[in-house]
Image (cartoon, rainbow, N blue to C red; front, top):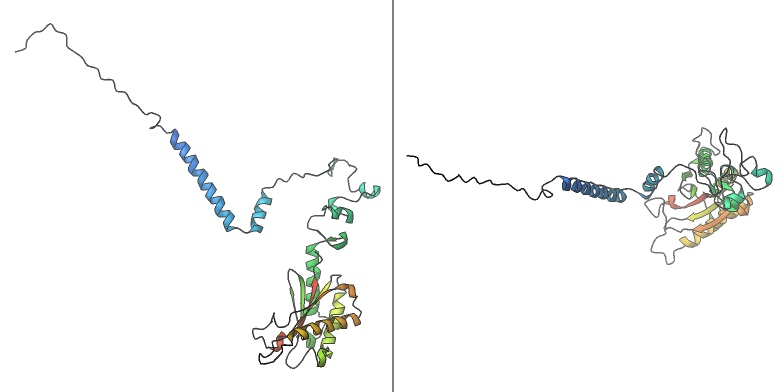
Length: 285
């Protein structure tokens, strides 16, 4: 049975208070994602620096280099409406102050103002590595008949090997068991004299300096004295004198080197193939 009461009912209100909104929000996720992205980019950059060569890194740097030309002295322009300045190519030769970087003169080359792709050679003349490579390859083609016509006959051609290296064009003159290059007292044979005449003729195609290097095959270890050093030196110098007698200017020969048996051309150090003379058309650059 219900009992009537004059007492008012007690109502309790519970207010839910939520805390830590900053911790449970999404702002920290954005910051963390940015941090992870930055670290990923950093490690990717470190990996690329370790996996690429110096030449590749330079190419990447040049790709992102601004293309706006920055000159030490500027004025005028080279466009259709750019006009002329006192430093333009039409004016500078007339006043005797040289030329621009597109057509550099010796005075400008000494200060580094060279045409694109050119390098300064001795005496200030411009050297184009691409043109020099082409000239050296033409000599090799003339010797080896790669251009369809050779300057030597088949009997001499089998004693010649050419290759282009960083140093220049290497022309290798080697002997065979039945065709020696040197006779008694390390004097050139008729075969080597004919090969020397070929070298003298093709050297007129360029003005590059020459280097002469003498190589010999190894001698038996039972010998009391190893004559390879004396023989390689004498043979290289005798070949130099032979070129001079053929009309080669002595200023063209830059050096004469003896290598003995230290750089064999054949895996067998005592093979006759290692007896050779190397003539190097040195790069001017």
